[in-house]
Length: 336
Image 1: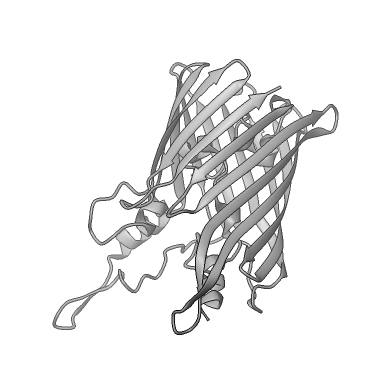
Image 2: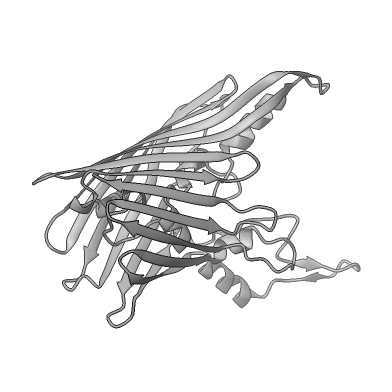
């Protein structure tokens, strides 16, 4: 019984809408840079292979023979590691291969009466096959193929997901935009006879480099296919009831603005030199989902920095989730 409950719980861990999708490992960040910027993906070209894996359209010759390793300590013994490498073929495009591993740790295996009878582990694995290329000097396209495997004690499941993206950059290369259909797919093998779906999202991203200041601005709009993305939380209902049983309805304008801003993620990058950058990002959606009552919270805020020296890149970021714990991301990149 305990194991069955854990299987169902892990299948929905980190899900977007209160557990509607499994395989939510597909939504986790694999790049310290994008995590610091508070966005899921970026629309501009960069030599950071870990950052462009999420948006395959931005794969380019800049990623030729580049490799990245990202490690993330999430919460309470949950760890994530990701590897990525790129190779460019003239006239065909740039290819990349990635591997993502999410380890939930070790757990006690118990009987219904609570007796411990052993240990078991749980983990998710994702392989990413990517391709991207320029169609002309302004338009670029890309695709990801992502088999995902889950193993929780003796239970296992698998699925396949696809990302398709298209992008556009201005002639002066100061701004770019990209539209991506992310995690389209289907389940191949069920978990304990439970039907699950991949966490599909339709997203838009834009990047603007300022002409006369060392700043780059980032914008992402998520869940374009779905307007209402607010969760129903019985512990924090939208309508308030006083001790006399009188119900105070949520202000409709406030509710509209809350839902609107949950679709928006913003970030900025300060680049004073080619050797160093600072990044800052914010997600209102994450802030609301991690809010505890009316207490002040930094949830949704992310920040980090990057160091560049010759063929080496080091990036660090921290994302504020909750006052009791926030994940730290470290990416190491090497260009051969």
